[in-house]
Image (cartoon, rainbow over all chains, first blue to last red; front, side, top):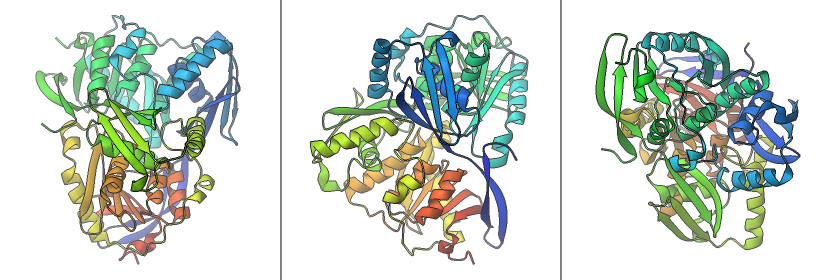
Length: 262
Length: 262
């Protein structure tokens, strides 16, 4: 049994048959993130890699910069609480909290238009990837998505170089899966700059902002982008691939990084 | 061209071919909801049915009860702002804002465990549905999901009776699609009690709480539930169907409402 799944009794029906079976569903776990003694948010997540999730989320929101800023991370898996202590000064934190509560209080990150994102520098990396490498990475990625194959209910995300998966995570939320990989990178000192992110989920504006913040030049998705996702990819210098399925794929932005993209 | 989609230039690649084509992607639009002059949240949504979305969201969060409480709804589609004025007294609203900001500030609704949900009464409706009716509803539902067929990037939700779809909505967010149908119901006086909700998305705890609040006895999904979704469905008296695809389906809770469920 994989972590993050739960057995349930299910009635499996068709028009003429009925079976009582035991099936597995993805677990959904409330994790409250407390930053420097202030309750910030409750994330609904898969109960794996909780430390990585808390740190990755705070880093995505701009509340943690580099690793030395982290003084302590304590996760209470029973109560569903992650306490993070950082070196951030109170004045600065107050401002960040205000921003977070006023505009970040939605279903994701803190910026909502390309204009807001200009604080994030353009991704300049000259890294390239070939069509064959993308096909191979996506094949390995889907092979790793064990939890999805069990439950049909979770998203996966991975940090890769052009030949293999370096960090992999799964979660009921596509945002959380990506925050988990970047949280691990931050905690373990794994370089993100110039690397490739693969995701099972849609590439909306918030996902593009998360990868831009880590200087990721290439994002590869099994699913569709949104128009804001495409616009941000173009503005931020990120190569965006979508509908990567079997041997086909769409390139929505900066195709010059596809080595054989002509 | 359907509302809510945008044309983009795409490079379509395979290992041996390359095509420049025009494709459509789902639009993603930031809508800031202002309740009684206080900025509450910015929703990333498909830019359709914005009035319904704002009202449905506030109702899902318990910030609007019945229609007479709504004094005014003004949507500015250019600036992406929905201003809602209600009769809620200031003291009450303050408490609600506090709750919203402290624990609801995540990626969805305000309750995170079955225990928190006990304020919502159990759904007592004796309504039943047959396997053939579920199959037929899902077939009609998928036929209606025009935007998804165009872009592969949006979710759909519908309010139905046992024979047909009464209200239908699409959105880049599965929460938003459901809020849009309930917002329309509230604004147009369409009864929700005893009706069926069909959704393309996963049935997580937040989705179950949204339908419980409207006394919906049956929820039908093309996708998987989470464990908390199943637990809430059982606790709240809701019949939960998942993986309804072709002529097959799983029943996770209260199968007695399936007329031929034996």
